[in-house]
Image 1: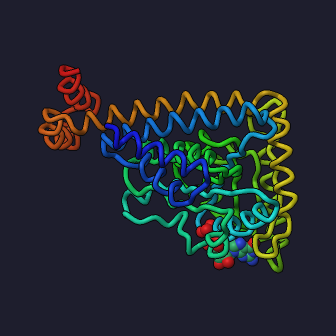
Image 2: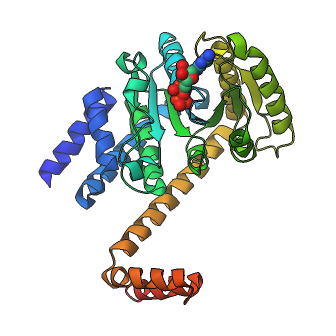
Image 3: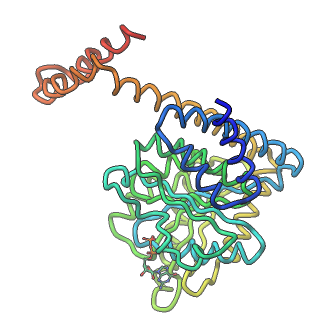
Length: 340
Ligand code: GDP
């Protein structure tokens, strides 16, 4: 309707004017699961993507926005780091948005990541915008809406987007699919938990930052740095122009943060010059579309009346071993597919 059109137009204007209220409303709109709102969100996103594309064409790839993924186990110092790093960036004239991907928040209903109280100074900074993880939906849903929040923030003038996630599950892989560079933050402590992290996440990390390299923790930080240097050495290279770096930082004393940033910029420059930066973003657009499809199909499936009537029964048969999981899936899918 005319009213809807006006609404989206105003929202779009507010976003590109850099109004925080409009930005927040726009992200809420893209996160909405309401079909009508989703439709409006698509109109808004169409405008936003067009705006971003024009700006990118004017700016050239070296001046594209920079999307940085950040992951690390609980207690690694992510919020302390983001507070220090974010302030460092805004002091240099950047505008920094912090988004969180926290699939666990869909179970607990709350969101720990992106909680503003974890970054008290940055959350008061007029050049920073902090947004907690959407608490509804699956990891796939959270991923898709985060993708969209990223481009909305960029249209609002944020040139650096930090996407934070906990480094314990699947979420870092989906985050690595929506950012230009992925940074793993680790504390200077060993243990089984870190061994698990080493195998999985290190593979997607472009930079490993050993945090808390201060005071009594310096020797441990040095040790962990050596361990990770040898771990990344044997990884299959993902880029022709970049070897993952392992750096030491302290989010408390802020030592190492300027060097870390310089490293990140080196990554960006070399990826841009080699053409990898834009290739990656194009590939990510494709992933983004498939996330939509997966989400949408799942939603239709779960809403399908005949399927719903059967789910409990089939699940129970599968659990008891009366039906194999594959046959159970066939049974449900059969009911679904008949209709499409
Ligand atoms: P998160 O769970 O990854 O967000 O970790 P937090 O940022 O909440 O930090 C966990 C604890 O580590 C807090 O007590 C911080 O004060 C502490 N911490 C964070 N960064 C540093 C650092 O660089 N040096 C030291 N010594 N402590 C730190």
